[in-house]
Image 1 (tube, rainbow, N blue to C red):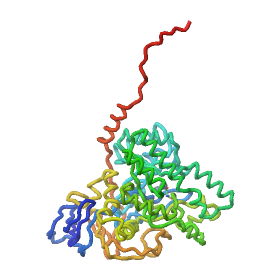
Image 2: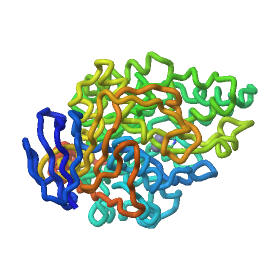
Image 3: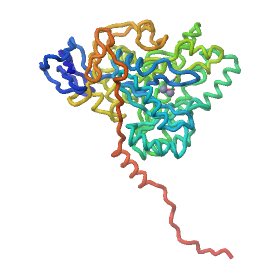
Image 4: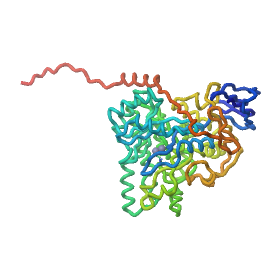
Length: 487
Ligand code: URP
Ligand code: ZN
Ligand code: ZN
């Protein structure tokens, strides 16, 4: 099967040019003007739109067992919805239960992902520490194409890890050439604040943001950065939602530390007023961690994306329907945390970013695919329209419009935090593995054809860092033997 995309403008993170793109056997075979295609090729008319690398959402949770329930979106519905929005790949999270082996959990997630329609990869969470965990981190990097490990600094009594685990795991990541990532919120403080709020009679969803103020995130981000700095490991901070943690990243980067920041489309577009909605289900539908923030934090997030403090955009797509959220009707701490977004990230970023003059189309490509592909080491296989790259592409209609709604979205959830938002800039066509999977508002997807994308580690950088660490290793001071003899 071959596909020719004709009449578009190719946009990469570093270049823009008019060209046709010819795909064959899952790869881009030719890029140039007036390309010919075999008689049986599928020809897509780009209609003057932008031909860009398919979006990569580096943070999703399909079918995640969490807070006593399971996220409603599975790998088939989730990757399909993602492709309707211009994403051709997700990086989901394997999250072992404490005491569960990492390989065991990885295999469970691989099994669940077997039904994916689009491509996927996995970060693996370190939720506890033992010799086995340390050993299995090595196996995952060598044999399973895992090059990033996640650490939750929140969710006490569940998947949270303490600083000693952060330090041991960051060290191990460095040794293996893998990227440690963190959910930065101080889980101990959140726990105490939740208790205090409940005791004060605040049981509704408005208690959620009160229990997780920006300082809670800023403190954890600073702490994780300090630990990574002492170890000499890089660090990727997921779902940065406030100025406090962005400032921490900016400080670290300006002092030469390799720290990356990810921001969510949701935090860029929605503020904390949603928690004061009088309808419980509306407020609860927005419960996610970190929570939505007062408006000035949104401005800081946009600035961070524009000035390079944050490099990637994601959604933390983690869907719970209203009956699931209702578990926390009388206690906000029991509302399953999570919101949807995989289908809408690209449109929200274009509409709020490019249309509003915050991002150029090339910067849009950088923050929706290319930077992620570089940070997680799959560039230029992904994140670039180039001969030899995977045929994972999007034709973007910069003038297309739609109104986002749970009634019309493809995500398997009854709520959308962008409900009613009119976006300009829509996905006209998605090509995955060389095939057209979305065109004219129709999905043409197949369960189980999504591929696992292995991600190699970074041996060169990490060898160098380890040599530097060895050179700076603390050494005992050599002293003359003492001349005083105790009688
Ligand atoms: O509220 C959220 N973000 N739910 C998913 C788990 C996580 O913290 O990433
Ligand atoms: Zn998180
Ligand atoms: Zn998450």
